[in-house]
Picture 1 (tube, helix red, strand yellow):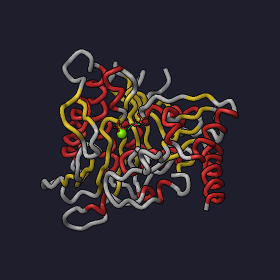
Picture 2 (cartoon, rainbow, N blue to C red):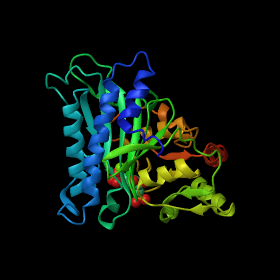
Picture 3 (tube, rainbow, N blue to C red):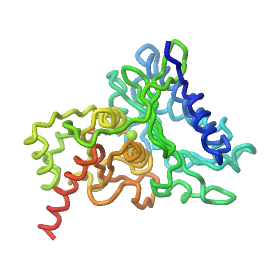
Length: 331
Ligand code: AHM
Ligand code: MG
């Protein structure tokens, strides 16, 4: 039998190879792993207990909240509170950030931002959903402030996602490559299954909600036509985590552009795009808003949205060429 490396072992080994590591980040990552296992358990039995369906409230972006969204949010918040390594959290489901001010957390180094359950519209129909997280070192002293959470993406200390799919997988990076762990339900452990993931430079899959074609700009319409002319395959699950996971493993491009209905795009810079951009770049791919690197974008508010194009380097560069060529003709 080949040696199994669990997430906890891997995190500790990585910590040992960094002489400056204090163990705080490692402990935080293990607590996120624990929260994910609890969420995964709930997702797996969702149809059996009363946790599918609407929670009867709207989130900070005015979207309907599902019961599992609330459950995942609560699980993450309580695991992060218990960790003692996190002095504040910001979640896609909450209007504002939440300081964790008990004695053992208030001086902690890190803040964590997350989308507790991404792809909510897929919950009730048993399609893959996921959790996305980003970890930053706080910059404030004393009370935590908004600026701790609105740092640029390139300041992320770690980022990752958990996909609750045909198996549950956690994929994360601390800025030193990307590794993936599959949950073995029989032992309740995430086990290293995808070491040092590299995204292919090219790919033949494009992933976009093409039903929005009528509200795309000319340059995006042209780029979509280009993908069709090239004979690419279209795959769109409608859960960013699942669509990005496929893109990371198989190559291709995932994009959610601005539309005339949503001029800033749909996906959130801090909870969705920055963490995915870190993973994609760490795997050798590219993530931009069509003009600028996602991780260099300025964040002015917690729930800010941005257009996003991410995936295989050559495909994202081509999409940018379409966008920029059009802009130079029209300007
Ligand atoms: P959510 O965080 O409320 O679940 O919304 C984000 C989701 C992404 O997972 C997905 O990529 C996108 O919304 C799908 O949007 P659309 O249905 O407009 O294609
Ligand atoms: Mg989301």
